[in-house]
Image 1 (cartoon, one colour):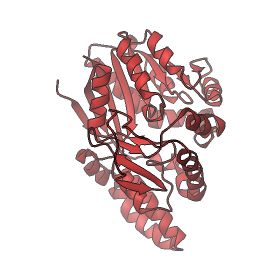
Image 2 (image 1 turned 120 degrees about the horizontal axis):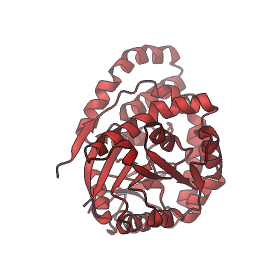
Image 3 (image 1 turned 90 degrees about the vertical axis):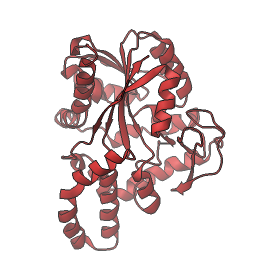
Amino acid sequence: MSIKKKYSKPFGDLNTLKTSFFDNNDGMLDMADGMADVLLMQPKRKTCKICGEPLKKPLFTSHRIGYIECEKCGHLNSECEDTDDFASKVYIEDDYSKNYSAADKESYIRRRDMIYIPKAEYLRDCLKNEMLNAEDINILDIGAGCGYFVSAAKQLGMSAVGIEVSDSEVAYGNAMNEEECLTHIGLTDSIEYIRKTDANTLSAIGVLEHLVHLDENIDAIRENHNIKFVFASVPMFSFSSCFEVAFANGYNRHTGGTHTHLFTNESVQTMADKMGFEIAYEWRFGSDINDLYRFLMVSMQKNNNQEFSTYFSDRFVPLMDELQQVIDKSEFSSELHFILKRK
């Protein structure tokens, strides 16, 4: 079947939710550098995270980490393995979620409605093409975080529950939703939940890149024929990666931190094939231009050009949606949402 494609989404008020990326660039960069310290202590990666092809020399270095492009599927692999030790340190011990949790119910709902309702609407509308109404969609959301997507899906009439390794996020999300819609699990427990779920849809919003045992999760999805659809978003090898190489003093939200590897069009296809699924729908809307804008603004302010940064911003911001659309249509943008359908 041909892939149904959608491109771009207005930035809207996105920057109002990312103020720390601008206002606390140095603090966020220190956080990412700390994660890089942990990653550099892990064993060297020998084979591609997606296809298992032996890896060669790095294509580039960004914030001290070398990144290797797989010659077979194009997947971008960091030179060091993401291990259970790495995951335990950056996801649990350091409570990474504290950088993103909304402060109260009102801001929780605002974030949900701004970022996650459009994702849930996209899933609902695409599956309607597959003859499923909202009430027919039953979702297991893995890596559910504070439950924003679970809450959004339920708001639109779908059934949804989530699993998450951070007990603080689970507690926060359940409190905000005033129900036990999230369950705390261990680092490797997602595999067993996937094997046993009767959900017809698995969602993984910004999660697959964080799974240490990705292959085992893929195997579990393939083996559970209750799962008919997989809805995921993943970070992509993109212009954002290039900008982060160029701006060493800017917070590297994309190629770095907890992102130890990045997907490509070819590696997403390879992963789908391994699951026994086909790519049915794609929605490409990245934040590459937003990242470039952020790096330029931070650099100008560091160079004591605050007044000029405002002059620049007034002229650049109105162009951002149109510039990002060009990048999205080039299919080299920073994020891909996709829906897989079982073959």
